Length: 287
Image (cartoon, rainbow, N blue to C red; front, side, top):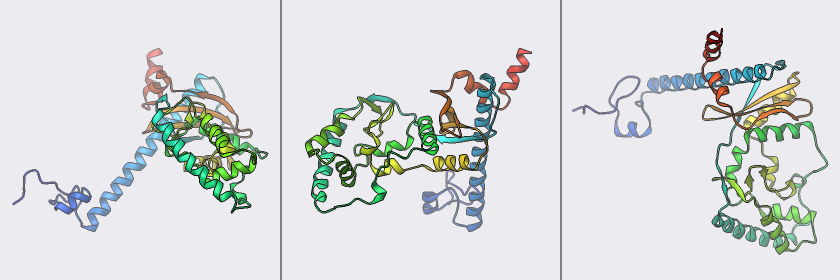
């Protein structure tokens, strides 16, 4: 007998079995799963289109308010770090220090076994290009959403310590530990890497893990591709979290330097971009 509150397939309205309820909202029939997938993809496409439209309205608002010529029609969407800043807790410092001491110990053993580091692990400080400046500007707009994965380890491995020891061969293990501990910011983002502070990473590049130096998220790769294939002199960057605009910046495509950036989106800005007709309505009222 069918229970009055039994869950039903959202496509064919057939009562779902226990197993079907556990894995989704559709029955096991292929045609129902196919229809549900098409609906989900259509919903995702609409959400993305709405976000892009909102970002374009914000871009237009910024250009209009700044009374500057809109030199580039495109806007690049980036992730956004929205975590709160708090004092770095002693428990996190101890966890990091204990792990770092183990990595240094392993590195000291490896030092006598490994005579050369792979070229991939080298940090080339002499090479500076506009792309690296563009990446820095983009990361400053995002403010390190990916850094949360660093937690209390910061991705530091024995290979990281070995590379640092090659740069400074006279440092003793205790001195290496002290230098890493001295770089810890007094305040960091909640639930993020112990080195993730308001000014970015607390470590200089030669002390960071290779992953931190080399990693680029999909959005950042997309930005680099966009700049390399665009004739526009500027790129408008917008960081977004859960469909909401958090920060924006305008960078020079040639130098990668920032021409304008906002620390947060003003209330009037949000009101003007939240819905397509809000700006037009405001203009009619003023008229």
